[in-house]
Image (cartoon, rainbow, N blue to C red; front, side):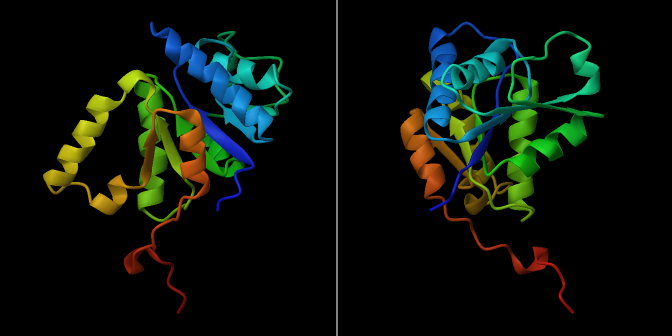
Length: 196
């Protein structure tokens, strides 16, 4: 069992047009707070990002926001967080979010959300971490993405064991349970550090 004391959530800075996504974002924040799991996220007060934070804060959860300095200037930053960390750039932000988190959950979002998801799963594939990575597939939002990944496996560009690093569910409770029981794969020998 994984001891998930903190989870980083990747999601949109827009709300989209599906009310279930907004509702699930609030509910995820609430469930993390109720389980004593710290929310780590991109520090915005807007969009799905703001809803996850709101859900956690409304239930006395601990919320750490990480935001690059240039985004703070656009007045999107949430000023009511438990802790706000400012970084120099996007790369430093992602590294800080990774270091603060025991696992990751991706909700619906756009380019930025996908970029964060694929970077963190690539790091896992390369053996840079062994943390669980969850995808909350709200109302089938990620169905087409999953079909693309399955096609990558069929086409020989993605190994099945790397595809399996992504933990997919459409329900928050069962996703969290799967993440807690996640067993990391063995790091390939060619990726293990040379101890000679």
